[in-house]
Image 1 (cartoon, helix red, strand yellow):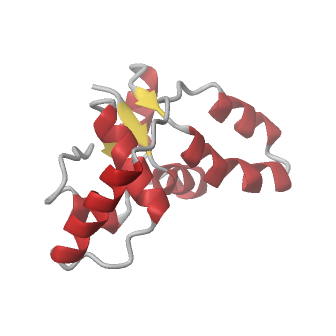
Image 2 (cartoon, rainbow, N blue to C red):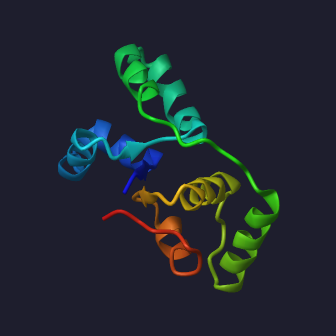
Length: 126
């Protein structure tokens, strides 16, 4: 199964290599994907810090097409709020929706996604 790798994983990977085993394995097996939103979170900092090679490598990661369904995002947010999951940003809802739409698991360190997975059809990578 393809894993949509969230920016939280990439940041940790670049910073400390904590998740290298799992992420390295997913990369080696060709099981990773990104999307335009995740790239827009990561690339500006890499470019400003002059990490052009790393930015170029990230641009080579397969991308899941984004088809934002705004009504579904409203429903996701309603479910979150009804279940006490507050302060989930629209970008996180879009990332969750993207993973669900493509039947991909989401590889993340973000607690919001772990909470949302109890109430949405979102699968997480371990």
